Length: 170
Image 1 (cartoon, rainbow, N blue to C red):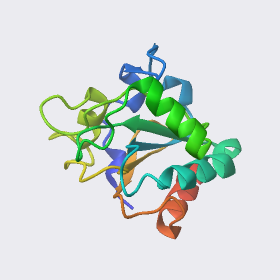
Image 2: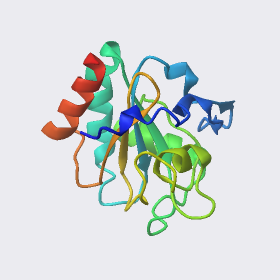
Image 3: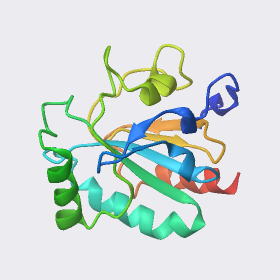
């Protein structure tokens, strides 16, 4: 577990404007007081089956204060080429996704979304590029990033579940 959650100079994740998958401007402020699992997702990836596990995680823990937030990203092998409407339809029909989904973002590079920049950019508490689709960033109830997990960490992994439970109990 990172001790980086104490980086009090970092703005909480609630401060950044994002768009829902329906194109409405919003922020993560609606999730204040909840533990947030941010995931950069893709529909045509070997890890796409993780949607099922993410939805199961959300269903199991949402009443206890967890929200999973999906951020489609086409930066890794062009594996998220669809429109927001196509992505939404795919997630809903193939995996029954009910957790919040947002518009496509870049998670790396010069056009990285400011939300991701604040967390993993040069001055972020969890700095370093996202390596691939289905990278996960865990954010505490206070809006501060806690830890990150790579694509290989399944939504059902004991390590991830323990980190989520610990964050919910903080």
